[in-house]
Image 1 (cartoon, protein in one colour):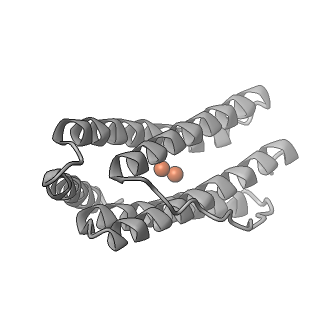
Image 2: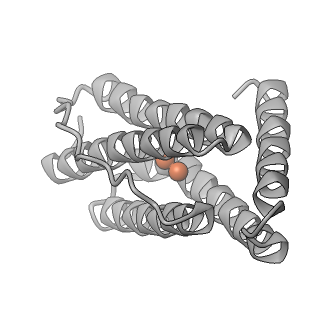
Length: 174
Ligand SMILES: [Fe+2]
Ligand SMILES: [Fe+2]
């Protein structure tokens, strides 16, 4: 059985992942509307990933005999000055999610819930990968620049990174 404190914290994380999925969906739409199809593909897929993160938590809570509370989702931010700002907002968001996962694991350790702490290791690794990915992409965006044909090359770059990530995940059966 899950301790009520742990269950509440897991349910909060369900909400965080659900909000992330919506945020990335809004970003995908902004990219689509701004003729950045590669970036749109990247964020549509990322939005699906966040939903998968949410579902993984939902199944964990249910399997542990707990009660899931499916949250209302926040209205996502949908206006961005440019693609660089959009990626920076996404990166800041990932950092916030990482902090939330850290706190969740801290709580499990304090409450001596080793099973949940172990389950959350997957999220810890995932956040590490996602933060690294965003840092790399922001560095490339800065390098290429958003002026003139820069946007075309940024879009191609992001599309390529996305395709590689999708292929690696498919190969790993993720
Ligand atoms: Fe996530
Ligand atoms: Fe994420």
